[in-house]
Length: 373
Image 1 (cartoon, helix red, strand yellow):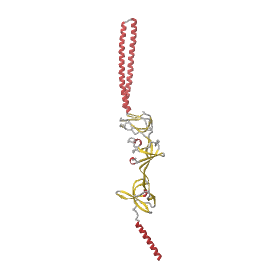
Image 2 (cartoon, one colour):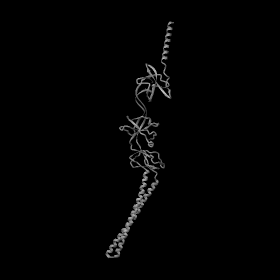
Image 3 (cartoon, rainbow, N blue to C red):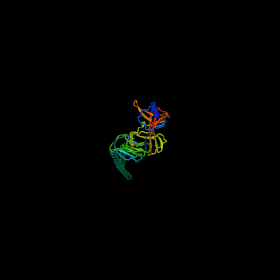
Image 4 (cartoon, rainbow, N blue to C red):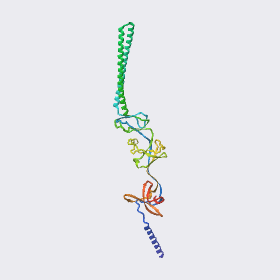
């Protein structure tokens, strides 16, 4: 009986001690995000925090837009296709110019007729003069042999007629030259107008893109009609993502090109150039270091760093727990290990990545905290 009483007293003493211990160390606040049933610990350290998004890219050559300059009109015809290799000066496209062709053809025909008619007229004049010269020579020979004064006078008359015909021929040549000059000037102007309504390759290259411009559609002045590339310089174009690129929130851009790491810079596309690459975001990049070279058709791992902090106090994201709201802002705490005791400790965090959060207040390097495993 005494033994049973002693056992009961021991149990009561132990229960009282446990109750007092629980009251002296009240539990931490309820976790809004419940922790796992098993906890491990980790020591707070200093290190880097990288908030990075990974995408893919491919190297492409820069394409140069080609236009009709300051001319507008109805589109006529393309003389090339994407992928065609062209030479400088080669005809690429033309506005509708049938009326010009008719005018040019008419002036060219007029010039041919002018020259033909002049040649006939000039030959007739030359023949008439030659005949008079022969007659005059014969008259002078006969007049000298027969001492015929009348015949000699007629020979003198032929001299006057010959001079008149030579003057008429000279005047006809001058009129012809003036008519040819006017017609040639008209033809030159028409051909220049036609040239301005044409696109010729400004340099040797390859047609990289042709937009959908149908014959007969109206083309405004300055519109990019096609795109031409020499194959260089090269840039990296972001591919394989439906989301628009937002360069303003990115601090650093790095690329891994066939195992070669390099720093990249955003290179915006103009509104018109976006038609070439089929991207509304203009997501293309170039190396910032001139020593970093690209090869056509290389695939590139693109790393967009929204945040990149070095040597900051950081806590693993699975060690922080969300508390309540203060002035509409969420609060966070960790379970700090103090003398092998779990102590809820409020912290203030800054930049957060998928792995770590920057600690602005509440922890220091070397502190031990519990983490969800």
